[in-house]
Length: 352
Image (cartoon, rainbow, N blue to C red; front, side, top):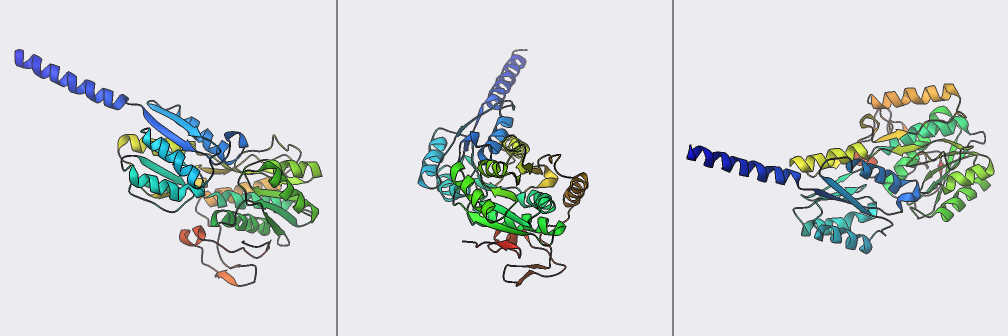
């Protein structure tokens, strides 16, 4: 009887320790390149962070408006030193600083968004936003009258170039005469600069404005001019209700929840994740009533086709100089898309 009590007590003690271990709060940190009120990139990631706050045993925090480079290393290092279990860095320029910190904290899980470098405790992730870009291009191509679409773009890196190309191909599939004019702002978030970039595109005859920018500045410029617009990151219709047709948008919640669950269960491993429309990470915002029903139906049919496996970058595809980059009947590999540094025929602008 005494032995039985000892065993029972021991088992209860083990169970209590196990319960306490399971109850240990997991701290998850996020680093953002712009304010969460940008209505764009950081806003979308922060909505994903809030999904983690609904999980038991998970506590999140964030630092916003962190410049790429040395400042981001300081912020990431500070989180690691404080014992954060998982750290998400959500801008391309955070890649090398995060990798440096990851090597110093092997027990911490690091996740970098939009990059390509990895370590045993550092993975990378992005979404196939080019799929939603293609769909939004179809809308823009159908709605332009001047056949000139303006595109206010951040930096000439593969992520942005790939999106412009997909958008252009989408526009061309419904309107072969369309051209997409690109202006680089060299900013992720600068409302005034981004709005001015859109105005410069309006001055050369663009009657639809698209963007790869974090602010709704280009949307506002379009509405002030009385032309159409395509947003980005989130549904920006509230900022330009008379112009906003739709937007390629992010839904990070499912990915962040799934990642943290893997860390909790001990099944996480460093890898490159690139989910898309099929996984619900990217999507197209509801189309405005200004978009004719037949156009909406065509776009939604294409969306279902892409979810079913249809490719976007399928040959023949030529670059601006008329050189064939993708031969007829073939499609680009993920590696080639991730390293894209050239514009498709129909884009007006340079990749510099």
